[in-house]
Image (cartoon, rainbow, N blue to C red):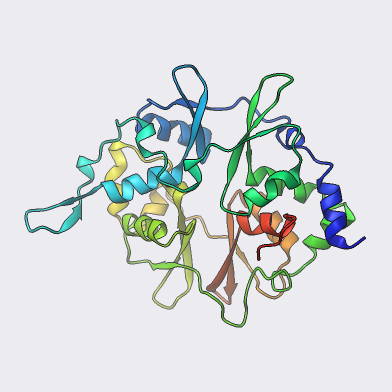
Length: 311
């Protein structure tokens, strides 16, 4: 049996119930809750998304930080007397029902729900195509849990003792086709002179989950993703007009969190997975010296373990 078949045979023994077992009570909010309240929940619980319920307490959607970031980045622009659009954050309405921003990302247009008896290969293809999270229903105890890409990577890191998982983890990024050292498509970047608001806008318009922040020499200085909207509220909304590194420092308690990096030649799939889990991040930047040449995301890792390798 080939390594790929052995891997899928093993993963087929893992149910979604196994992956969410031990997770705490699901944090949710009403679809009518104000955006500012949902932002506060995300900040307090340090989560990227929250399921929304209707008046009958049924789950109807999952709102994530990307959608709130998109709302902040674009709804804050208003035309001035000269006809040009400029950010006027004092006009941004965070009291709108959060339902108003759901559907701004492609993923949230569908509520993804699976059964706890489904197996890991049943959802790996989905998680390889831009879906970051889904609800898992348990028909026995009637509970609902949230399964994320992070849960899957954490499980795989813990099960590197299995030969088939180990074989995949031992592949270098280059051999796994997760990085092109010959000069493939470069990552999306912004410079340190940009404001955080402009970086949020570029992130959305480039259809990526994060942008690298580089200095005038092209050296990696930071990164911006939708998670950097977490903690925003009316009292600090104007901070998005700061230079991006100043904004990131402010929202990290005064210190700049350094991006997690990997080597294009020596790093392996397994070492990057360990970095993702240990650093509690969703991507690792691949650097040549100090300059970003690629990025490996959770979605990329999902593709490596999917029955269909999309990379």
